[in-house]
Length: 251
Image (spheres, one colour):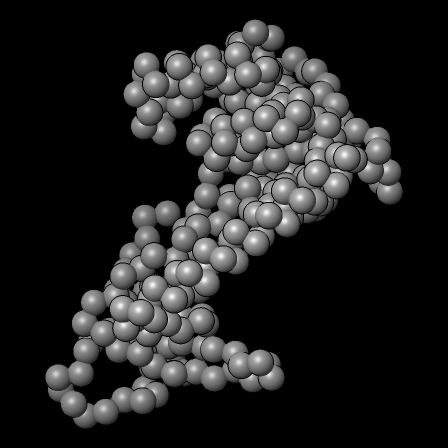
């Protein structure tokens, strides 16, 4: 089979599995009597905070404004009140400035799921669990993988996110044993992406830092089919209007 045929089959299987899992969750919620609403929520917005108000002093104090859209594209807002509200809205990839994300050859840890081809080679920036997971996935699929980390010692980078020293060392050894190349003490300085030519490689210039294997500020060129930035995630709270709930953010 052609590589793209194999990759399309993998993507199709993942989509089917995700859809089946989501449907199963909905069935379980319905079975135990949990009301499921698909829409966007925020703590009472200024123009809706008085909507559906009543004079009942015993009404739950916390209000959410929920916007739902029907099949005809019409949006309806309603207010939901509760004594306690759990915020579990997930996260989105952190996108550093200077990286030309395009969803075709330059990806973050979400858009990589839309990859339409199996790259022969890929560079991944990051030293966390997500970066390592994708490094192992692509390596197991036969791609040449280069993991770019800023720390001089890969084990230390893993320890910074809470992994035990021995587990970190074992994990790094497993990556190297699996054929994943680790560019330590390095960061991406620039990208050269061929226009209208998916067959030509991306040229990534790496810059040495922290006096690693190469002198600080020294340059080297890396040629790959694709690039993934997996450098952390940020909470999906921007549109929740948290200040209305008296919640202060520390960053």
